[in-house]
Image (cartoon, rainbow, N blue to C red; front, side, top):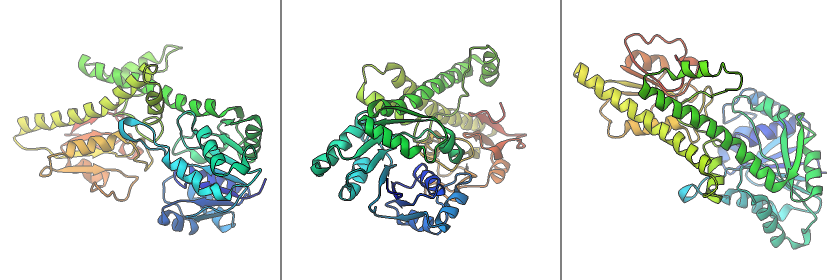
Length: 401
């Protein structure tokens, strides 16, 4: 296999993966359609927040093993790590995967390895194989085509890319073997072999399972609010049972995995995925419920004090201590709370983001000092142990419990 790797997509997964491969002295040609991203990486810098990634990228660029561009080049292995957004009615859109595949089509040659890492509906890898062979029939059965989903936690990506087990499924046994050989060069976790369809479903099932478990916790929080019970204390006590492990509720579910992947199953198998679909509804509703609780707190404050309150909305990211706002329930809540409230004082806080195109961001200490109502949407470490005396506090994510 050629030492060269082409990585299509340099986002939250593509760039760390490219840096890891380059660290193992394999030349990586990273591709992204965003010129700013390309220029930033070629300076040895990063455009996202992820611990240790800045050092890894800087070292890889300086050593000459990582280069970014807007177009692919000929290589021995091609990794597709691009977004898979939604079309109407939460139907998955694989057009980015298709576009990335078409970009490398002219460069493919016999013996090359083509891997999709992007979260994809079941059957996507086979569809891309059909696309490749329809355009390049002379390569039929001459390529190694596989699917290998990432399974990392933002904030710990560089460690988990190396140490987590991987599920690798080829369109045939030779493809699986080749893909396992490739990943074994930089992954120390176990490499589990299967077929492409099972690997695709495995990724969707992993995150759907977590979504269902979070939905149970979020549903509990709704029940406890009506029952006058502290949900955090309840869960802590229930989890003392040796076979119970309830997760922590929040203001919804975000990110480009748990909040998205279940729809890939529901869209394809709507009649069979009742629990999965209902969990999505519960977690989406929780965000709406949080926004309504904030609005009600504002009305109660106004009735009691004879003036409109100032409100601090604490956090926009989809989970603590990262800058990733993709599918963030906190962002949805902020948008909903701000609707038709332009004359009121609202302080939007996100300590991991310097500026936002839509929201004017405020320092968290200033926001807490000035606001009458403090709504914790994300449990960032900066929000712990703040002086909240005299404030109306809505804790949706267990900052103070």
